[in-house]
Image: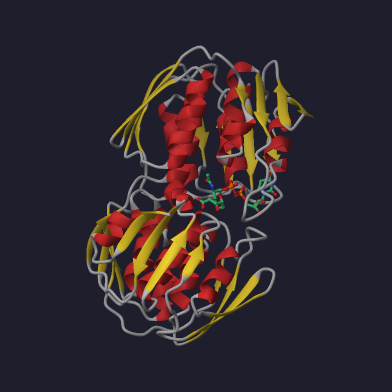
Length: 418
Ligand code: EPZ
């Protein structure tokens, strides 16, 4: 099983580039099902989840080609409209094929994704929204079976803001008859990126990035070409990695305007962060204060940076109260950070971090999910001695060559097959 060995005590300095956004690439890849022909995506990150999505699209009968960061998807007449359990259980975002399949082909047979380490991850809001557009949905042997002669535009109000739910209904509404109004829509930059691509395909969408999105259905869409936005979570992870070692790190090819809450919290803690349109720099800082953070939908502090920021707070002067409001079980990294010597008291949705510089000592730890694994690597950068992070396959789902990027800044992160 793969692991990485992180040598502590090295200061990171220099420049590093962010890759394309995983959480934008995935919905974009499913959006291609809405239009036969050749779709082209630039700045596509090389990640396990992208590979899994290519495998699923190939099973549908598409042809995918991912060379470097250029991804070509040729959508032909589909061979099947079934997303099999074996694929969906590995990559929950496969549920995003539901909206495009039902809108374009009038049927979909998609395995329920099941839960994951950070929570039960239900899809009830996705299904209610698709039903509101007139689809008949039933559950059969762990699969969502959906049928619709023709989707009809409707008003959809999400009781909880859901990124995936907004994406599924946004894609389905593009080919529905009439207007769809989505209220309490997610406002993440990845939603805007998806809407921009759908508009290039011929969709009529207004309000993406706000909580009210309206879609005027059209009869057909056509393939297009698109540059995927930078990965704000990877960029934030790299900035925190530089910050925790006290170095000066510039992240290039990123979008600081997509990370307002992280930048604000790092400044509140005492870091000097400078930013331009596509770069941001954390400047050398030898000590910082504990600050309180509550995760919430964009533009508030992203849940996907909670674990990484917690690692940073273990080295702060003072206490930080971290509240996770999005997922019910996203403190799996806490016990592993405690194993390294951090002083953290987790409750159900709140963790109290009592920071102390130099409190971490290298030890073997276990990655449990994608962002927890990044948090443990970041902690290893400042733990004395060596930290072995096991089950590192989690990292490969969402970070492109993270160890190379960190080593390029002066870290020593060595991958091992154990
Ligand atoms: C997306 O997941 C991201 N994944 C997650 O990133 C991210 O953490 C999450 O949004 C929140 O920002 C992708 O974009 C592929 P949600 P998603 O629907 O869409 C509840 C990472 O590390 N909910 O916004 O699954 C849900 O349980 C991953 O890159 C329902 O109750 O998240 C959660 O509490 C992890 N019913 C809340 O809403 C539903 O039908 C927000 O989930 C759907 C969601």
